[in-house]
Image (cartoon, rainbow over all chains, first blue to last red; front, top):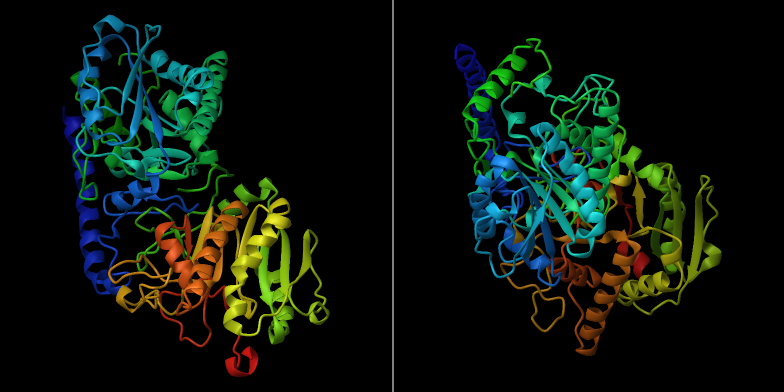
Length: 335
Length: 291
């Protein structure tokens, strides 16, 4: 419990320092507002463009009306892939009802719900533009294996089915709820979401896989952002390439008797380092509810739902220790 | 919408902070606005080089404007898309006056003969039609991206793959830091280039535009149609095809916007927002040169 408090204290100190910086900056720059003054609420407190010129989507950087007008003629069809295996079926109702309300509202969305327990799916009221496909899938004994097999399943189904049904495809964790609209600002060729932990831990403690034996290894000092595997996507072609490459990495690691530190998320981060996303979503788009929200997160559009309290505490401890550069054993099978 | 493919890139070791707090770097429709300090040229180069792209440039050298060709080409050889394959398409009514300029390997000069129209306004307005026709007949099979530039300009600094995008427009140097009400849009409702008060995102310059060759084909065709509509109604827009370009880009937003670094006017004093001038006008006597 002490370590938990210490971890939270560290993140609070970071937030304080950051808030002071933001205040000073806003004061200093306020007189520059005449430039493009008809364009409202510009964000100066956060990075809005990557060094390879991909926009980073934050509240205040975009007009959804303008974007919706661009999509009007295009008859956009977007797929959402989500997995509800074993106890995760409990999250389906919350996820589907909030997604029907807030995810690409007004546009055609096809939900592909993979589950090992199709009979347990409750009746879901779908928005008129949306459709739901329930697809039975095998479960595994280890949650890490379930997590990593998602990549394989997605790529196989893109090839056999999804490519004929949708233009864009997003993989979203099922244990989430949407509280604000997530709209066409997410639509682009290859889209990654910046992990909410990125803004609460020091840069050096980003949890890339570093062991060179793993296919997901990222050399020390490299890496643009830490992306979350809970929400990513893009065009079906790009998502196919990504999921294929990641699963190949998973299989190769398995052959070599190693498992990446954060499982499929490590492989995702390796892929997105070498294949730059064309658009990044800020942590507004997937906020880990375990964290206290810093000022720069003005909106929480999609949040994780509190699940296993024990796992939550353990994760907080791990991050706190990583912030202090404490060496940890890498086998987390107790979780 | 961004490029239709993701960039395979070698990770870059440099830890420079790529951010500009003093200027707008993303439009409300999430198109990047390219300023010095927003991008890492190394990452972009490592991603675009392997694609083996050919970039085309169109420029019109009619009548006395042929005198600018030499300097344009020489400076382009030093700064424009270095290391990439480039085709320069120089549209001219006087092919013999085009100087021979030493070009780097992978780069070539193509002279496109066109007829000279009686007034400079007419010449200016016919550019859209000429570019569109040339794409259909020739350049669509030769280049991936096409930039349409004014000839009476010189490159002073690097113009690289950070400029590549589906539909690319540039901010006019005279209007990037003034309120929208002062933008010289065509305000007469009888013109097809009309933009009413209270509308408009930016004022784009007619001297620089480009994108995927297919996209340039589409919007030069649309602009040419609106220009012809005006002609039929006996009206000429305030700034000729620049007015029509601005009308077009209001309803069909560019996917990438270049800052005035890419379209500067040397007669203007350099404000603090402009860190680097890449492409700029040559000082000239307009009266002498136009007619």
